[in-house]
Image 1 (cartoon, rainbow, N blue to C red):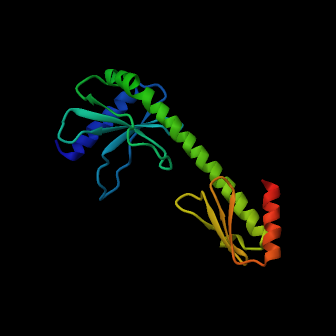
Image 2: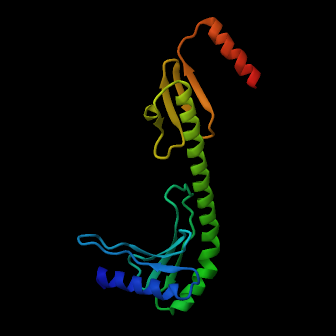
Image 3: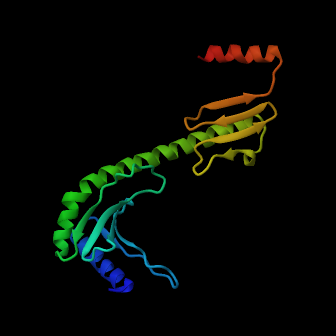
Length: 194
């Protein structure tokens, strides 16, 4: 079986299975010229959850079922997956997906969504705190250096030293040498804040 036939059969299988999975729809990618055929076809849900269907190399007649997760989530490698025979009717495959795959996958999907929510909250904390610091030290906002790949930390270089805004929104200050009276005043204020 050539790759185009295999991909077409996978798309048909996804459409047929989706008819028996309420809330899920086949998400068939549009092929572009000079593009490799995708290895997976997805069943998607409105909230972004996705079931990936892919043929198993060197095992014709079987399909691997795995999940789609937000790319920002950091999940352990033991993500749920199952394999199914493509010789079975689509309604039976949908039943097996519902019984054997979805319970574990949906738990992992919720964990991934919680991670993304936590990440967005951290980005908002860091942005707010970094902009407030920049305002206080009269530093233009474009001088804030956000850590990558997500803005879950930021660094500001100021006349008094380096400010690092951390994930939690706390600030780490690395300062240049200070006069003893200034250092003692800062130390006193820090001790009062504890």
